[in-house]
Length: 249
Image 1: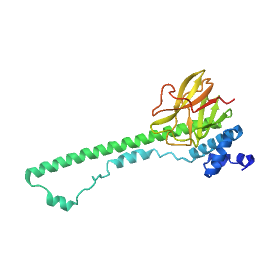
Image 2: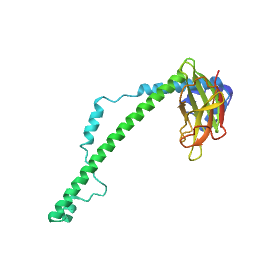
Image 3: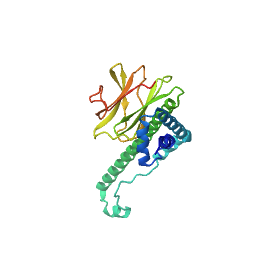
Image 4: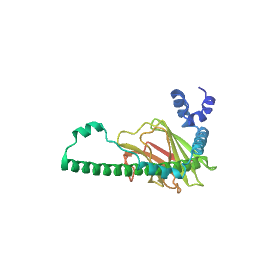
């Protein structure tokens, strides 16, 4: 495959549409080609914007309908016996009354707990979706900014591209094909503030290809580093960086 052929693969690469052999060849090329890195960043930003444009916000009445229906859904525990078998096995007299009352109370508590759990799950899902959408919009804003500048590097068996927008004072790190960190470890991003490393967030250890909005403002940082840290991250780097990048000019 010629260099000209590789230059033509930026769009397909941004959409994850390349077969493994072509993807590997393009990532080797991408590490040393700033023009392709910029095109990949622009195509990625466009894809993110198209995805956001296709999303449909829920109707305002949907929440109330869901909460109303939660209280009307009948919950059956697993392995419930048929009703005719329960009747034959039911105890007699006051003992039976006490047993029935206890069963009703247990069922009421169980149903109430289930409703609360379902409501909390729905609320958490809404918050997570809103947070993910805000982050996707910020990533797209940095990648599509008129003053966005990028720099690429080989990192952990894959390719990494740093995109910085001075007007937004934010940075995005895009990774492709990186080897997953060892179990219980995570890739951590850092801003280099004149030799002092400032945490810029964690990468998803379960994904080899991702775009990460780096935490905090660029604020005059001279570069970016990536280290392998314990799950949850560290206050300061504890290992030798797997990659160091200067800020793109």
